[in-house]
Image 1: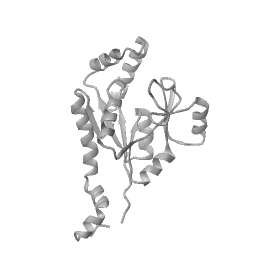
Image 2: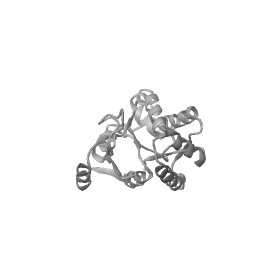
Image 3: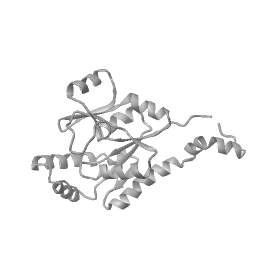
Image 4: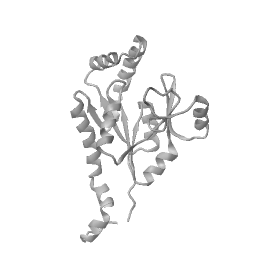
Length: 209
């Protein structure tokens, strides 16, 4: 019997599109999906826990990890570094776990070079105007940062056709259900189910190796 190997899901979105909230809702609904915890050099924000939200390290440690080729992908975003551990990811996939990477478009491109079968999901805001309203509504960013995020958003949206699925976050509940449906539909594919259900199928007289 062939052992089931897990899938990699990449979720990408412009800052302010609601990616973090949607991913949190997905993980609550789908506990078999595991979020990859990235390494970062940025300081922890209020309420963030080391090892749960990120692995917080300084730049010297991060650069040492780069030299040792510990990262599947890494990128610098607004002066801070973020990276995904390749050893951890590979071990979880071999255990049959589905892993979700919440990364930016640069990281997504790096991951797909190594794992071309990774499933890409783009969270799209309903409009640039709405995205700007959300960014300003946070009340945490300067005018310079907001304008920089909007410019980055336009560049990221240009790459939307490169992804397998597009979820528009115009209504949070609808977007949440759309995101969950992607994971459930992928899990129900015949190629996946015949491996997962091999013992039951054998008892029914089906001959699937």
